[in-house]
Length: 215
Ligand code: GRF
Image: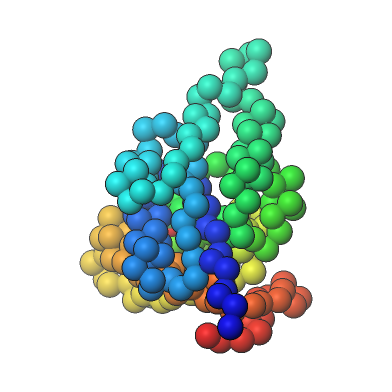
């Protein structure tokens, strides 16, 4: 029987990189089956995620956003987007995983990689999109929150849902405690979703993910 080709996973991260680390380790240990981590790309040259990648032997590319400046000295989103598009094309990933990537992807990239870009967000989407989702949940008096792994669409923190996990909010939770308690759940949920993505087919039907098989 022919061996299944491993799915090529490229990660985009801007910061700490704990989700990237959990996923890269799960790929290396085989907890995520039939996958290889082909690169970590970061828009910040000082992102701790880069050190984690070097430690794990995952190739890195830095597209330092501070070096993409137009004549006015402002961030030149267009040239940055072109460089990012070229980088993605060069690595030819099957899946692009956002792991704390803090820039909005340009629509051209989202279109080119439709249903191939995955993100994690620390709330039960569609509730509490955007920044500080844990603080939003506390402010709303929510009794539970969680995390969502979803396909990326043009709108921020939207797009078909691949996997969600729930977490009860405790009366004494603060933004910090909730963020800390959510993080291991994020890692587990992202690992589960990526393993499924790499090993089961899915279709998007009326904006929803419909899995075709379960391995
Ligand atoms: C996580 O909370 C993730 O849900 C959000 O950004 C944070 C990234 O954390 N999108 P880390 O860099 O993976 O540790």
